[in-house]
Length: 155
Ligand SMILES: [Zn+2]
Image 1: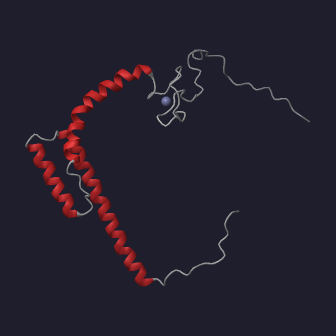
Image 2 (image 1 turned 135 degrees about the vertical axis):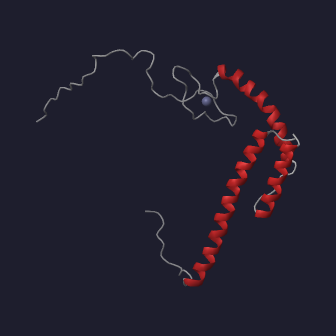
Image 3 (image 1 turned 90 degrees about the horizontal axis):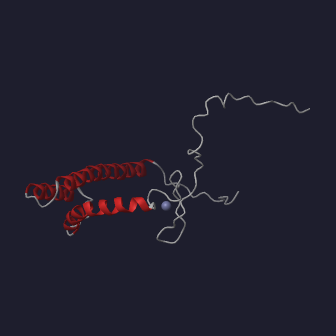
């Protein structure tokens, strides 16, 4: 027996919004440089996402011009790109960055970003160092893992 439930949601009473904000998320109509459809959502009421919106192009151009100076700085740093995977290299790079800032060759903002990266890099080096040492310890304690046959693929 089907019982008819009359849904009584207390909507309707405040019909303030509803017209412009029919926000069903639609995908952006533009396509990427690779030719695949853009996977971002379109802006509300627009066919394109933030990145593809024509009105944004001016903003993008402006941001690019502003970025030009920074890009120049980055290129000068890139010339001496290093692996930075050891404490010694981090130390050398850091002191280079500091000296470049002092001499005005590198903008403080760029240096700040570099030093932030350095601090992350240091943590990663420390972490992987620790991992390697733990690996050695574990290999000393545990018997080598036995090869398990009969692995079931699928299902
Ligand atoms: Zn898009």
